[in-house]
Image (cartoon, rainbow, N blue to C red; front, side, top):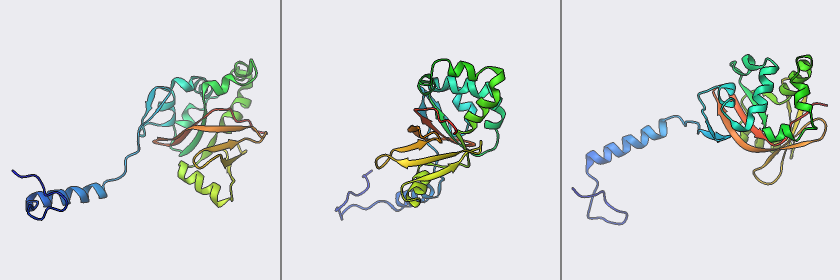
Length: 197
């Protein structure tokens, strides 16, 4: 059986049956929904059909964040329908805080402060990187987001593709992994802990 005709060959023709199947496959491919990619974080795949907590617990880079979410009693919230956009500090980001800060925050008596800090990293809605960049461009180089805690985060661009997130104290975090899509939102891995004013 001859192969389908190459470009520029007028002597061979794709058999009608093959042509029909190829066209049907092309149409089906165009009509099929785009499936979210599985992103690797902390050496583990983050599955788009799992929720924020189900994925975060598997990331070796976010064990401190997961411990903090559990101590703050926010597991049920972040497993909820949402959707949420979460700026998730890595273990290294937490380790960069002054000595003893994390241990102090994890104590039961400091739960309100811990909740405020963690919810400061969460924005209502499912904001992809493309949407964040659009907001920054629309704001002439700056976009502000209202967090679940009631605070404000300021987003700017550092180069054509790098988004930076500034907290109310003026400290800046770089996004190091983008668009980690979840069933109930999206996560961005960041290199600094954001602190409310």
